[in-house]
Length: 355
Ligand SMILES: Cc1ncc(COP(=O)(O)O)c(C=O)c1O
Image (tube, rainbow, N blue to C red; front, side, top):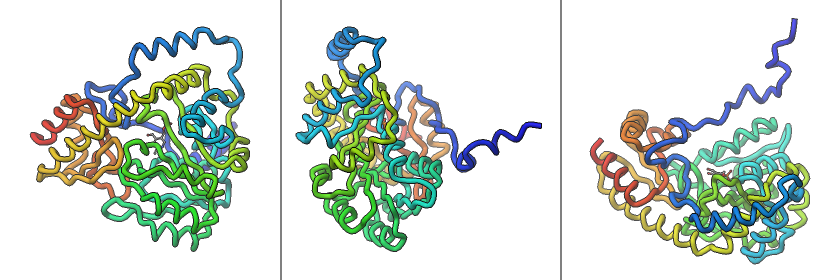
């Protein structure tokens, strides 16, 4: 008799689930994955593909995508030894967690945060120390600092601005957390382009325990190409590179990031549009007495409704796909939707007002 296959697998698999997106990934008005509503314009796609077809497809790309890393380092005005590129920032999260965690290690994660943090920590059989957000969904900075010290955690991971709460820490609070703890601090800045706060990036040389994570999937509209970056001081970066999957970024990703950064005014225009639409949504929904609106520092908004499950379904039937985030701690009956095109936002407001 064969042993039960489950007993042969990593025991941590019993505590985690396969990643899924409720309601799927197709909709007439798709607002459920915090994507940009603007695709890369056709003239730029053609320029990128024109470069890509000159590449040797039978040859491996570089072990690490040095061309893409150089382009991003130049864009940020920092040394390329401080930058590493990945196949989406999710892949970089696996790399950084592999470099930092393992059985017996403790990781502090504010709750709720991006769900992948907990999943990778569980996979690596590390102990999670959750620090609840405040009922307003804001970070509890004092509790983070106190808990990091009292629990002697090895690693702190913070998404600021945070998904799914849409709230940020101030620059000074991030600095305070980094300075008050000996733990490694990973600051995931996936939504920084939409934030009122400035990036903590300028402190990577001053703070030896700081790692900054960026994704090109949100403001840069490249979710389909899969590009992320980590930034840290060169000594720490050399260590973080050790568990990295070799050859994980394609030649296409390297060309794409180089070309998009060379045309960054497209990104700036998209961000201004989204911020303007965010204000319009905020004003329109603010006068709706049947829902509670949380102030957002991202490209998405959180609302609390009377019954999130039925509202999710009603919107779905009207062709509008949002994310039901009610399952997260402190987020009962909350829905999350990203800012879309003006007409999409108008239809969302209309539905939320009539339903
Ligand atoms: C906070 C945060 N980090 C990382 C990611 C992953 O982005 P990607 O793997 O597309 O770079 C997301 C995606 O939603 C996110 O919300």
